[in-house]
Length: 382
Image (tube, rainbow, N blue to C red):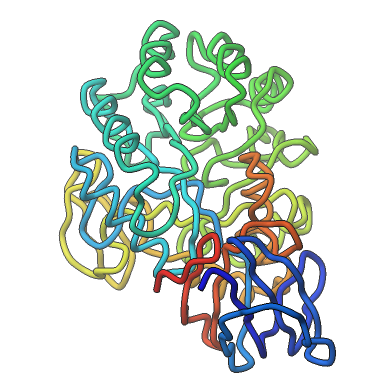
């Protein structure tokens, strides 16, 4: 039965919570949302009892590298599928397959594997590709492997687009590198979200990049010149630009709770995006891994290189949502940051909200933010 009636749920609408409501799904779309007092509705619907839990729009992760022991750069379709399944199991219904700096051969192989999986994902849908590198500044490389970092190369980027085409949705670069501004101009023509990180850009350089078309900051505060009162850097430049949105890794490690609240106060939920930036340790826990050509040790859920550098995250989207609320941000704003804002940034016009006419990408969460089931375009997956 394609039509469904989800009853007894607290529905997270864009700016309010509708308690004890019913949501009707027809042909994969939200058809109607009502309180229980008005639940009579003609038609043949499969009833689903939400048991008083939260019903939120499917979350969208614009920055994830791996999960459950699989790295999307490892050259197999199986790794892409495993991330798709892991995303769905943790409340994410769409994601950007995210690269790390690598050889051109490995990057093109990753793109081919993503292309082959699209349309037959076993979990969350692939909304496109996020290229994190290789045009990054070695001074702010973080866990990115320095031997693969290089200056922006327009001809190389054109080759990448020949393989990936419109699948490239986001590119993270360091705009201060030679050729950086030219690359921004090219990416703007391709209608790509241009993000800045792993960058030593000054305030003035970042302002130029934002004026030229950059509009996003990847894992804000991490992998970039820090704020100084005489050298504010790209973070303050981003704070000042209304069109610039910020990624936040909310795992109690990458950002202090006060910084998360500051970002929220300055940008609001419309200007923030929750991400996992997860490596393959997501879902597995502590242990030793190879990521981006590095040996990574995960201890107490924190991934680090041998020198102590943070190496991505192990947080899941449902846990990031929970921690955002724990850190003092309302549930409605947290869901906006996890669902609505990334959908808007990526141009996913029928996702990111529970609203009539939108795709029925839905998550049922209990009071501990554990995923009870995931629905994508009206189909229950897990």
